[in-house]
Structure formats: C-alpha cells, structure tokens
Image (cartoon, rainbow, N blue to C red; front, side):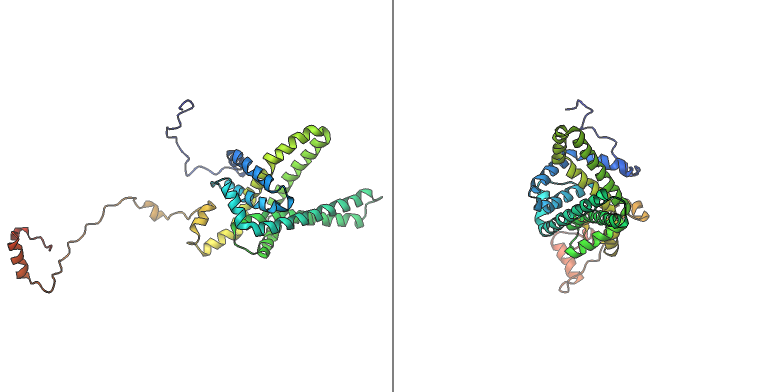
Length: 310
C-alpha cells in the first residue's frame, strides 16, 4: 500500500529543538487529531447523562478522556471511560447533583431579576444590583466547575478540598475562565439565533452536533486551558518536594522529566569495560604451596602452566 508516499520509509521525524507551537494552533491540531475518538467519547457522555442526575458520572469519564488527549496521551475507549467512572463515581455523582441544583438556582435567579429590570418603568439600583449579583454568582459557579472534575480524576482529595481549590482557581484564573466562558456564550448565541431564524432546520442540525461533537469539544477546550494552571499551582510544587515520587503517574500526565545535566549529556552511551586486576588466589588453610605443586605434577601440569589460579 505504497501509493501515497510509502508508509514504511523512515521520515525525518520531529526535532527535539522544534519551537513550541502557539496555543491556538496546538489546540486545533490536537483536537482534530483525535476528532473521531472524541466523537465516540461524546456519544458515551450523552448516553450516560440521559438521566440528568447521572450527568456528573458522564462528566467524570469525559474529563479523563479529554485530559489525556489534551496532554497527548493514549486512551483505551471505552474501557478507560468506564473505569474512571467506576473509580470516582461517589464524588462524580455528588458534584454532578450539586452542579445541577446550583445551575437551576442561578438560571432562575437570572431570569427573575432580568425580567424585573425588563418590566420596570425605570432603571434603579433596586433592580440592577440584584441582577449584577446574580450574574457574578453565576459566573463564579461556572468558573468553579471548570476545575472540579479535573481534580476528581487527578488527585485524591476530599469533597471539601476539591470545592475549596476550585473556588480559588475560579478567582485566580480569571483570564482563562473568561475566555472559556465567552467562547461558550458565543456558541450559545449562534445556536439560539439559528433556531430563532431557521426553526426546525436549525434544530435538525443542532441536535446531531450536540450528540456527536459539542460536549467533548467543550471538555477538551476546558482541560487544554485549565490544566496548566492546576499543574503550576498543585502538581509542580508537589514534585519539587517529592522529586522521585509517583513517576508513573507523572508520565501518565505527560509531565516533562528533569533534563539531564551537561555532564550527563556528554557521557558516552557505551564504554569499554575496565580491565579486571588479577586477583591473588586465596589458598585454603589445609593446603600448602608444596602440596599444590605436587598436585599439579600429579595431574600432568608443568611449572610453565602455572598461572596463579587454582
């Protein structure tokens, strides 16, 4: 099957000194490289989250897959998807229910206060401030859950620790969080406008896109964006204090190993084995030197054959 360039011919490969690509281009390169596998993961996510109360379980499995792919690591679908759910089902289910309840509360608050502003005769602090507070709380909740499921599958932490860390990341990674939110808002606006103007035609396109593409794309985008923050704040400090711990887990996250020193790099891969010095034979106590000579003569050995070995 050498019609298109000969797959068996060795290529130039990738240089170790090749410059790192911009994050924007690297994101799409990794995403489209795993597009079909992400589609399979997307289908699994939709099937598991059909009972809306199990959405947290589906999110745990999808987060593992997208974290691995964003870190350029291999995944065995669907076994890794379901194994991750099996290992983390308690926290996944709990946080999924929490996210559902809080999302409904935030959505209702936004609708209620927005309608209050919309129907009021004039703008006032009494109507604007509650809406602004509801927007802020909704944004913080959205930012917080960008980090929850990543921590569930990556660390052994309690419910309280994961929630606390996620809130801190929501406040500390504002730039990345806003970028993720704006992209999702843009997709939502496009979907709403398409449905508004094209009605059933748009619906026939939007539903397959959600079933096959969007949740996995969203999760991949989140993991690609937030993992460097989590790595810098939690993973790197841990391995600085424990440099030789969890080597396999470090490789599983595709974390860079320490570069060898200059001296180590200059060492040759192969070296000649050192010449072993001839050891002086240890004569057992029950034998003397004269007895050894007589023994060799009896076995037909001359003095010329004597080489210091027994």
